[in-house]
Amino acid sequence: MEDNRTMAQMLQAPIEGYEDTIVGPQINANKFELKQTLINLVQSNQFTGRQDPPNHLRFFNKVTSTFSHPEVPNTTIKLLLFPFSLEGEARIWLDK
Image 1 (cartoon, one colour):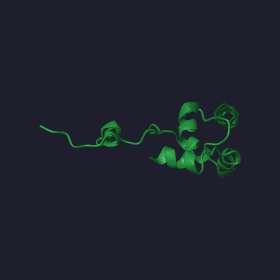
Image 2 (cartoon, helix red, strand yellow):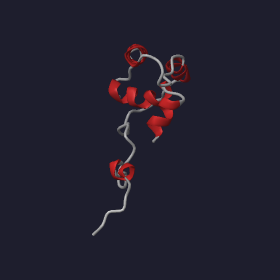
Image 3 (cartoon, rainbow, N blue to C red):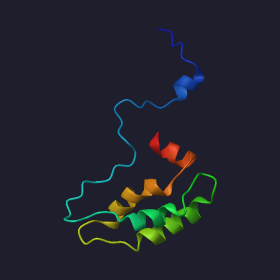
């Protein structure tokens, strides 16, 4: 049995059956919503892939630590907000 795939094709990871990489858990909290002002604050320092990643994450952690909800873990809030912190090539990468 001969394999006629190119080297590039053989190096591609299979994607069938896989879901999105970042999936936030179900939220069972009453009256939980992300305020537009918080989303705007996260978007004020978006990462495009060309800036310093540790600086971006420090800013993101600082901003997201200012918001809490008694019924929603902070990690869930971060998962929901993280896509808003990316733009350009970084957002395209996340959406793949």
